[in-house]
Length: 129
Image (cartoon, rainbow, N blue to C red; front, top):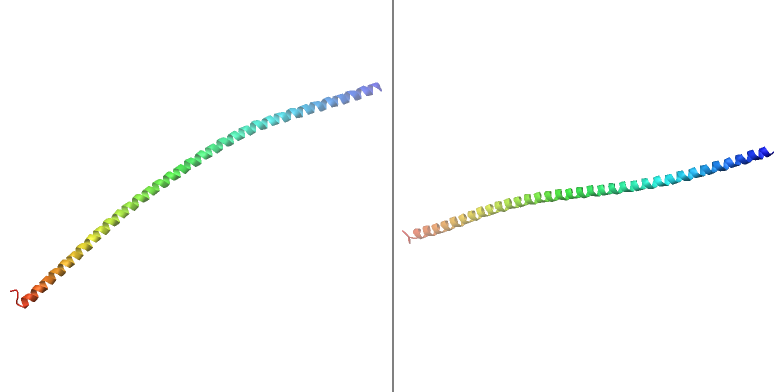
């Protein structure tokens, strides 16, 4: 009887110790897990910050390059437009000068033929010999 009780007590004591050891191990593992998670979370958020910063820098650089490219393109287009405008103005001025000369020539020819006609008429009438 006594032996059976001693054995029973030993078994239940071993069971309690085993349970306590398991509980302690579980608590230790949970703490390690939480600590590892904190470290990982910090590391991930630092990497995320670095990635975000790198992305922002890249986007800013691309934006600046796009703006620069656009400014260059606009500048070239403006220069081309100015050249075309100058050429058009020169051409129109030359055309205008030609038209003016032609008009003046016609007026001169008209005046000459008018005077010639008057002289002919007077000569025919015998006023001018």
